[in-house]
Length: 133
Figure 1: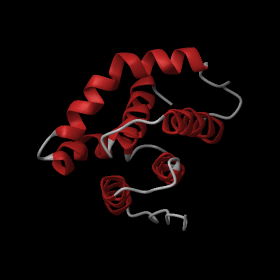
Figure 2: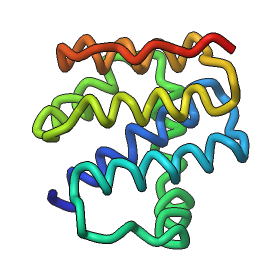
Figure 3: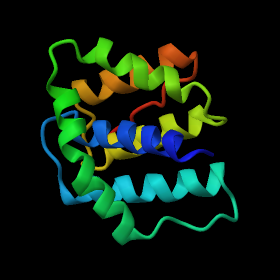
Figure 4: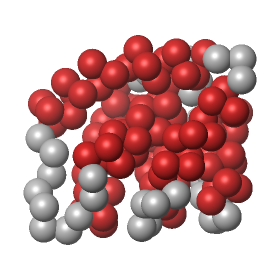
């Protein structure tokens, strides 16, 4: 998988982390877990991205994701990212990762549901169901 596609995967996962307007430690851990699980599914045998590298990427890019989540036209602004991610072989795994992050704090906020619903509808995939907390 290309590095630009991984950048887009990481960006969408980070958008999910920021979607409800706050970032809890448990969501950062869920972000790291989702990345590891996606790497295992999409690039088996490639080795995981070290946690320090992932946190550095987060620190360098969090402002871009935050700007995206704060846009009034958020849904429209997310479309170019979703278009680029259409080339991802296992978009359902990415949706599952989004759900994992959204549910990490034991509550799936409406903004988090909106991101998952938009992505699943755009890609024609099954929307991961939120667990009953």
